[in-house]
Image (cartoon, rainbow, N blue to C red; front, side):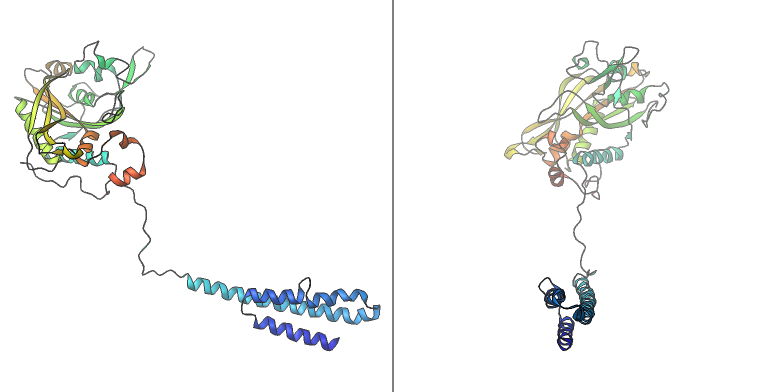
Length: 371
């Protein structure tokens, strides 16, 4: 038995040392110490020996088991370390390769168009003015010459908030014209006001970009949309100044040498005379091409500031005149960049934004220079 145990030990230790990987080592372990292994079988045979035989064979078999188990553990640690080193070497990062592409955000078309418009008007000498989204009746309607029973004051057109303790109801502004009122007023601005150009005396030349709200929703209208309105107050201002300003802006915005426009008579409570300006276009092929063709597209509402509005704001209409205009930012973006449905601009669809969005590093407007 002693000779056999020595031979078994030599055999198993040799196989352990020669095992090329952990899988081969596990096979040796099962042959030696597994449930049906050779050394395990010898240990089971101790139960059939006499007490004197067990005294001799027990320590010898247990010693063999322990030496083989130690050799297995040492070899397993060495093999696992070598396998880990091989994996690390195979997975080494090559810093000379380009980095994997990272998902980038995009500028929303509305914000891109607004930046383009602000940049053009800034070059024309317009200052930026801002005001609150939640307005009162005076600044949104009364000061702008809306009569008491005007349809815009009704619930089906305007988002009204719950009346306050004094019974007056705030509302979500239906246009950015209240900013013009606050700018023209000579009274002090309310505490905490955030608009920039409030409280000016004439001459005034401002634009007022921002969100506006109306109860309307279809392919060309949305309940919340964006406007940029303009106001000029000075001496001896007339419709010719208004038309030149709008013609210059439209040509710059659509990146054209010149445009053909026309005024159509219209009615706005806050301007007199009032007009809507159309621009020459071609709608064949399902696209709107500005500056060509024989069709017309309404693009902006405008007019001379009504004398009543000037009086409501503390400005003498016999001394000062002015004009005002209002563009729909989302609608201009739709015309310039070929977006068929305005409602998609507010749908929060990343696929739509990836298609129509702009790089954050794009210039506000590639066109330059005023004619």
